[in-house]
Image 1 (tube, rainbow, N blue to C red):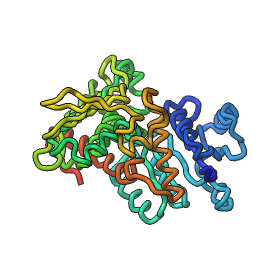
Image 2 (cartoon, rainbow, N blue to C red):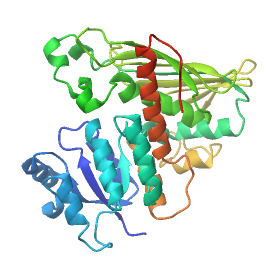
Image 3 (cartoon, rainbow, N blue to C red):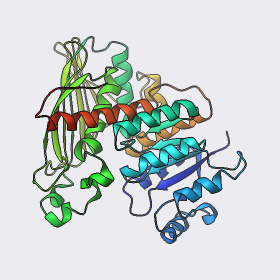
Length: 378
């Protein structure tokens, strides 16, 4: 077995919603070992969390700059190779930039930056660095999402006509209606979250899912946001009309105030031959729709699935694959890239996806603020 990749973690401490997801994913295929970290801005809390995880505290650093300074002093064979950025949005860009400048590979939570200009600057730096850069659009790691992508690429739907993607959550509903609470949540603070809450957090996942599965690029969009309160400057709900290639249109719907919804990401793609439907809360079922035949259901682990889907399936058919498995598949793809091994370009979202995501987010904000007009993407 190859030597494990030395992984550094930024953020993702004890109270983090996503920290455990990244840690489990990193361990899933025995490809990484957590070598160093800054789990929390409070060094004492970082040290305590490392002890809880059973990680040596020798390389639990007081801050990000110290991590960079100390790790770059070490021989190449000993230093951290890749860092996973799991912090609030406003820290993504400065951390990713400094990591690339100092020769580290990067795994970054989305959105990759808080502005499109930052994303393009990061892209230019990445191209010069020669390092691997992944953005954790986690849902692309599901076996049935990968199966859908490969079947569409092979022509299963024929010419695509329409795409309908939605991502509905209700978690912010108890917060948004309380003035004190809505003014204290970092996701509703543009200084920490960027210019968008709903589209920047979850709408961008639906956007990425559309482009990942169809292989098409969204060319222009028209967006309408709902802020619910005059003193709230961040969107918490939005609907986006999209235009792709000629005669291919669709809609992206996202909400953080969809009362009672949990994590309702879903996509339906309609083509001249058939359609596909997939839902994140039932991720092991991919439905193939037809006008002339009964609905067909694809499930993970069967020999009829594509190589990409099967490569991301760890257990025999009938054993559900979940969100940890999806993130694990992304980490596995990154490990292949770092080691110089052959991999499918659908194994992990890249810098290109990160830049496209910021282009989308800023275009939705511009469309709404201009009076709901059509805005072109680059």
